[in-house]
Length: 511
Image (tube, rainbow, N blue to C red; front, side, top):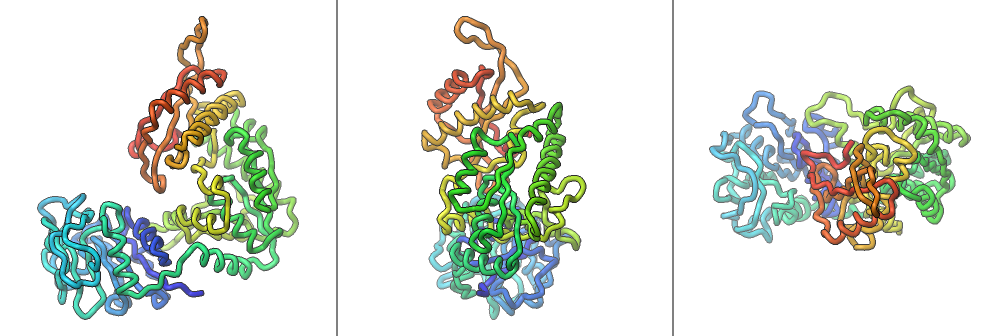
């Protein structure tokens, strides 16, 4: 089935992915492409959206898209930089604003019976983020909305379905932003809302069967959302020809290897669990530098995976849980001619399994869509709702060198923290949580004895995509109970602290 597609041209805005996610929320399929790499099959798209940009249209090196096959031929919505671009190069005037127009504003004027603003009234809050402003509208431009400081906040070009808006409808602060996108895409461009998790599953299963045929596929499972959903999709398509390998690197959460394996078996997957804990710990012995630890883990993972893949006869494909943000990030809006997909485990020499053909069933989906697709296939909420967990596991939550004893301590601490989050109904309100073992000993008192033991930090953040994150204000009673339990139950720890740093400037993980 051919979907009605929407094309989003990226000029380098930090919000471009957000536009795509808002469009997908309307059950409309869209693709992001750099402004200078417009797809050749332009007729397969029903509408085009131009993103914002950190650039100024007045700059010599301003991004210049080739819009001759788009403008006037199909509905076009130009956001922020896009709106200024259409003005500046089509008979209008863009000048530096006296004040940088950034943050919340309210519409003071909305043209009556204007289709783009259907069900949106004066007073509606919008989000501005620009330092230039449109002083004069483009040729045949008609004003359709203003704010107190921005007279030309939105316009339409007469005789075309071409709209320019100075604000960002895709951010949550624009309270009627989703309505505006719906007005443009559904009511003006007549795009059908047929992109649903169910349709994705049906079409992907069909496409995988066509692509793979009777070939064998190997997939490295991590226990996370992406690889699990990819596995179930492939299993639906090719059944027993999918061979899953779940490697225990000895750095997983407490009892995770056994519990995840049994969950996978309950889902009917053909999974082989490989306990390579000792091999990973040997490779990590004496390493303290975070990058060296990551490289050692990546190298051993590849060796173990390659050994296992060799035991499957005639395997032709390697499946990966790559998702859309991984694909987008590899194609810069201002980048050169090559578009490469990030290879997360490609370290050192290319092993045999890397010579396989790659299949990536989730590469069109955002993380929240992956979860919805998993739910539509009846997957267990405990897998779909799992917090993200770093590939190198607890190795980057143990600061300094790694030993079996340190792993044991951190697994015990982490288990108390995560179990308490679940029993207090806080787990689903947190995007990611974990504990960090610090390379610090501190004095304590237990009974009548002096102790000199480890300090652990607890970390819990809220986020939508991990790009930015705020620390979660967990109840004091929860922190008090969790701290007491950790110190009483986990031998080797006598101090617990809570990390209240946001990203930026801090990162979510400590290493």
